[in-house]
Length: 254
Image (cartoon, rainbow, N blue to C red):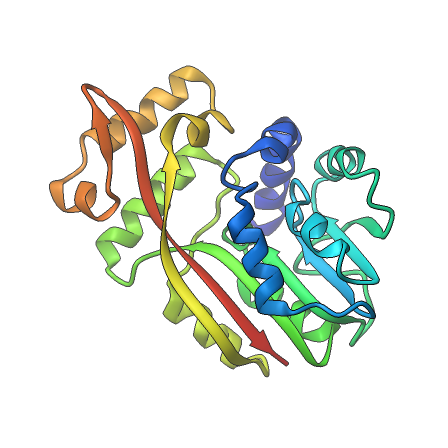
């Protein structure tokens, strides 16, 4: 099961590699600057960015630290990112599974992972690996889309994400993430939960063809008022303009 999910991730991101580099959501500069502010990176640091995608976090941090290792499961995605970030010579690119990292224990001063863990079939194993390769006292910063604690909202969100992106596995609830992190020698330093507004067309077309986009749009349009209200679904006539999802940014220390 895990292998088939990971193959789907590789297929999806190979096809969409350029779209993730240029994505407005992933390029949000205020989000990236918040990562630097929370980590307060030092010039001597070696940092690991797991599931780097378009390399936005790696690019943000590399000017403040000694080395950044940008890893991703998808070789085509990573090669495309390396091409875009060619001027930044202290970023090393490694094809790697987030659940089986090719690094020895206590290698990194900080580990980051942004808008990716919802693709991982075994989130507990991902956290174990992040803890393993992090130095004692090192920092782990994660940002990801999360599901609401309400089961109906959870189901609706994870359903439309899977419709839009076959490589989506499951967005966890904050309570589920906290349970996993507590079990892996991490202590929470800082957190914030927030709503993230997404332009529907940009979001959907990143991974889907037009006929598939219509199916997702119909799912939104036909949803119950409670769901449309929670996800702040904005429509213009019979089209979705934007909607909002929940995102969690958290800083832990080993």
